[in-house]
Length: 339
Image (cartoon, rainbow, N blue to C red; front, side, top):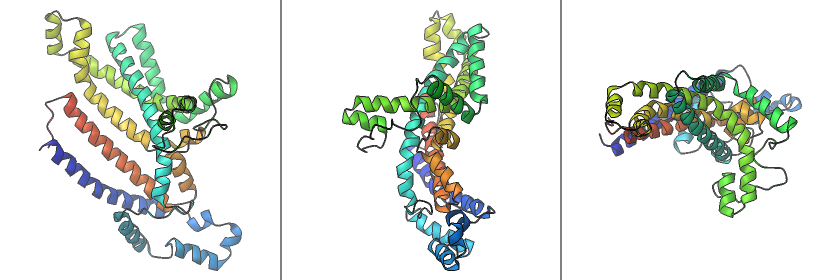
């Protein structure tokens, strides 16, 4: 099967995945022992039976569960994710509003994680069982093990509150206005406007949350790169390349690293999908207006359309990223065939 047919088949599978995810999330969210009426109406309004009935009728809560889902599914297949109970806006509009912030932070975070993770993993493999290797492995274990919300709080307290060398929470300083919304990515839009000061301010605000979110991914990438590269370096074709007199640097870069990166790409894809899903606690700590913050507020208000919308977005992210990872396999290893 050629690549185009493979991609088409995966995209068709995405439709069934969206339906399945919407059904599972719908059932789970509606089995929670809570009432959206209590979560969204004041105590005074709850005592008013007419207001409660009107609220239920407006959001379809007065219909049987299966009917609610069938109505939602019919609208979803038309591209309508419903209206958010909390914001009173279409869920799709909310997702378009909040997603760029999460995407920008995730790209920045993964850039840090991939660069530092691969470099440190390669160095650790080359300097195996040395002091450098032990230090890198220790940092990797720390990054994988430490809770990101604790690391975020500590970084914020140390670099912002105590030392004052990092900017506060948010995407921009309070005295600056966002750039014209072209891509809704502040750094890109600021550069398109030619406003270097605004672009640098947006980058500085991404630094701390980006490092916190990237710590876990960097640790995974470093450990995977090290173990994969050590395995490749012990193979016969590497010994043959060395026997031919090739420099060690050439052996690693041209022969070993490309083969070692295949499992690393898998880890990168999973980590990136996780970040795009929105790290709720980190985004809350740094007041980052992304999908994580939106999901947190939706859950607090039992905003069923928003909760299902976020879940579908996360599922789509994972499918698209896994598809890109599979395509990248073929780039790294020409022996890969798409079936």
